[in-house]
Amino acid sequence: MSALPPKLQSLLEMLASLERRERMDMLIDLAAKYQDPPPEVAVRPYAPNHRVPGCESEAYVWGEPRPDHTLKYHFAVNNPQGVSAKATAVILGRVLSGLPLDEVLRVPPEVMYDIFGRELSLGKNLGLSNMLVMCQAFAREALNSPQA
Image (cartoon, rainbow, N blue to C red):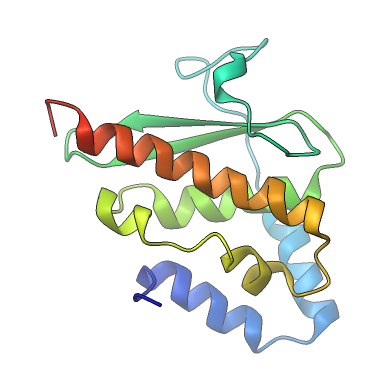
């Protein structure tokens, strides 16, 4: 596996050092930091082409171009009980925003198991992994645009 972005690697190391209950508490704390996207990025009702396939919490993703040819990622989670999706939104927003696009593309979707643990159901893993996959789709699109 290729090297992970330093912020993500650091987070994974921290999570790996925690007991299961501490890990859950940390992820709940991260979810509490979730914020809807700013109105200049998206307003409800959100466009269906930004909806994350397979996400039980009805999550949405946007990649906002930045002057340095990176993206700032924004997320919406429509399910108020979507703690895992909200934590994922906060994590991905922090570790992927501003990252070189080719590095975004190298993050493996299986990283969700490293974040949430192996108890994560296949269905929940699919939705959370697809949040990353959508970020990568925006990165790929930006890399292939004439301005890149």
